[in-house]
Image 1: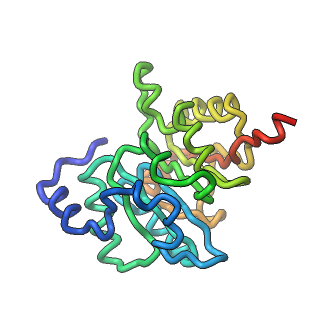
Image 2: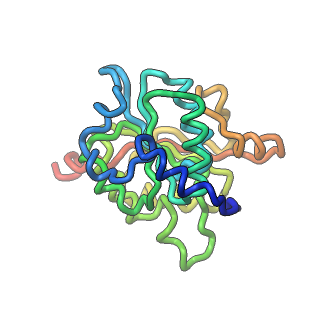
Amino acid sequence: MRMRKKSWALPFIEEHREYVIAKPEEMRGKWRELLGIPQEGVLHVEIGCGKGDYFLKMRELYPQDGFVAIEKDPNCAAVAAKKALDMEHDRTIMIQADAKDIDQWFNEGEVDILHLNFSDPWPKKNHTKRRLSSDSFLTKYASLLKEEGILAMKSDNQKLFEFSVLQFMKEGWQLKEFSVNFDSEASNDAISEYEMRFRELGQPIYRLAVCKPNRSKENV
């Protein structure tokens, strides 16, 4: 479901470029420094953050970590940025742009954890390449993640989840966690308002965690 256009969204983003980064490529290799992440903390990147509930709640669960939230839709991005600024959390920052350019924004091995949280399923066959778990995106994710870095995905959409599992396996990603009825609270994982609505309806939540392909072992 698309968010209605908000007349204040783009002006708000422009007024808060200290938080919604205009040129993320200039921060390549500098995200930990920008966010002030301590040595024991890790760098999370959420792709498709929507209204921001997930990364902001994750920030509360993991205050030592840093979070970069990416959202293509300026209306959603503005809502998320306003929430974040009102909460005055440190160690969070946003990018309002299409994630197809994500490999231009981070150095190889710079990211510890990538999050795909209730991504758009793009159900039409001719929209397959737009899915955030399509092969073209997975290649970029693999370059951004450090060795043993994790990609965590949650979804309420069974078909998208099944598609994603097959994509990860085809591309050589290593399956670490897998659930077709995931309990976020038991796993110290944040629950967004969107996820809570589905849980209240009895909808199962699908979740997996994978590690990037180990190309060095493949070449031995």
